[in-house]
Length: 129
Length: 129
Length: 129
Length: 129
Image (cartoon, rainbow over all chains, first blue to last red; front, top):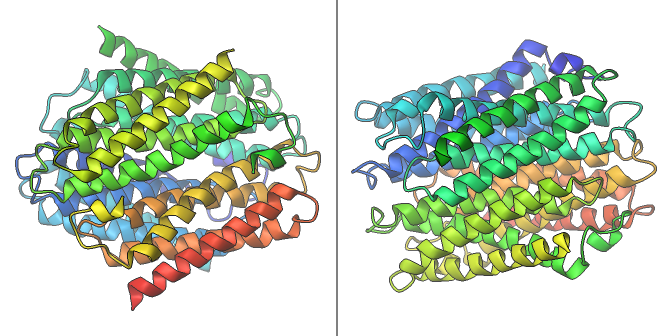
């Protein structure tokens, strides 16, 4: 889809596409992990996980959209959005990893958050170079 | 991810997963199509396309989240969200199809909107049965 | 802000502005109610409240955006979005009312959901007339 | 609404409430400004304005939600979200100010983006102290 855009892409198309895709997958994964946590018997132990999953989903949706746009961008806005998404993914991964042995949804969510964190890192590196 | 949820899924897992996935892909596709339209020389001809892509992206994000949640759902809320998403996808596809011969991003976007519209239809049918 | 739009508004400006405003306030209120419920000792009793608050916030964000746009609208998309928002507000209000005596955030959230539900009703009536 | 939360607020309630409110108002204002720009005869001159309004609306929605949550927060996630929102508001205000003499919606949008930028600044200062 990005290759049909009339403007030059803001970064290498593979790096850009990976970041957009991971933001979408991570937002969906965190939404399910939050909801699954809400249904667990030990939801009180999972409160921080649930909350950080909601933050991460919100940040991924906004950042995925902001880096999808190629027309007349503001570089500082895109960089700050990627930094915010990287922070949200990192915090959510840290917390989900603590519950990974007891809850498979937390284990999968932590893995996805790490993938999205790396994809944001790689796009940040490409945009800053 | 859905299979790790502690509650029974609200519908057949394949039908549910397809709808969630298509909402995510359609939201991303419409975001790019709106931005690509903005960069085209004939943006004034594409105003309706751009606007309906924004509506469709917003509806897909909300609906994808609402049907992702399995815990203590309200059936009427999920059905109405799917109806809204189906309407937004259908309207966006109709408009993008009118520009499909001139703009490859519109052609691809129309195809994706039709896929998401069908996925919403199938989940609606599964939930109403 | 709506009065500066170059196109005729899709409905009476007061009815339209009230619906947009209530969608914004209701989204914010439901986000806080969900988070407050997560911090309560009886979070397991509040699981349905928390979940429906998340649905309602998502629906209000999408619907507020879709009805804010005046340019080249698709009437069926706007009507279906309003129906979805009304359903989400009504379900969330019903559930929050059940906890209104024990939790002030639920009482306030139920009241706001009812205001937003009415504002959607009024805009639906104006658009359908 | 914030005062009903069972946890201590992450910052002074007036500073916090102002930031949440401005994020909501700014998201709504930018959504209308983008749509109004799309309907203007000189939409091609307003492409950057339209695009930055979409970015700003997305960032405001995500940030308003992330700072609304008081339960078990990750400080770095909240700070990075506020930095991202401040950047998006600043860039959108800069661009809208360039069109303020020709388009009243751009003038009002620039003013609102500056208010939201300041509210983010003030909450950042409160959280970092």
